[in-house]
Length: 331
Image 1 (cartoon, helix red, strand yellow):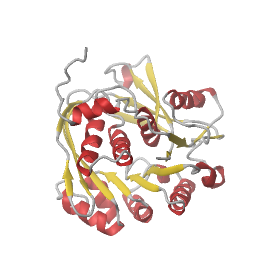
Image 2 (tube, helix red, strand yellow):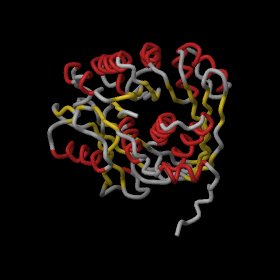
Image 3 (tube, one colour):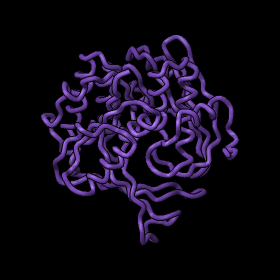
Image 4 (cartoon, one colour):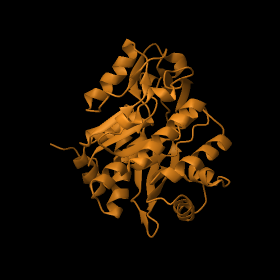
């Protein structure tokens, strides 16, 4: 298996300590992440060769972000340096019936102002077999939309498998813009994941979270000629308690993962952990049923740890997917 390349914006996350509200905070914990960066870290932690592509300013804070990637073995040599700032967001942890809250400060970031000529896709894709992107990057700017299309077209020409996390962000663009762009990106992709609502938007249908997800998946795979498409299903009961499962469709058979009741430690990165675990299982030759089980178990474990990326091992994910869901201590 060649390297797995991901493209996106890396950000600095600042969170009050514990369950303090922003208005109470005197200190903030710093984390570095971003959807596609989280995927790269998780895959590297699983033992895969990964390369992360972004643009970051040439300053000490951006270097901290790069060092965080390097710590886990992610290849950062093709990260472009330049621009004025790293994007920042603030997260306030939810508790009980109080939801997690976010404030974004990413306008004018280096990645949002990146240019197409910043990225040499022939060089970036040397030795690569897989490319992963999301619906976040093309939402950053018109130029980032073009950069994303340049990447998927180059990956397609080189015969890479291409995956996309639909990842609609209402703070970045409207639903109509998302729907149009994603529909144009999906014909280049082989694997897709997202929520029911995101899949419906990609299909140009009205969102209905109570719709039959299998019917949506069938339409999705047929329309965009996917190898695999999967929908994550969750029910949130409080800020810290959710149930979590997923369904995968390969054009012939539906595969249902077991459902997990999760007590959430950190809301960030569950979908990214799912994407990374899905890619790992596919590239490692798991059976189709085990692909969706590994992806769901991997994302379940992410919710048990602080930070943006899933730092579970393959053995820990397999232990959960094959039946040990007790959380019993390991001595």
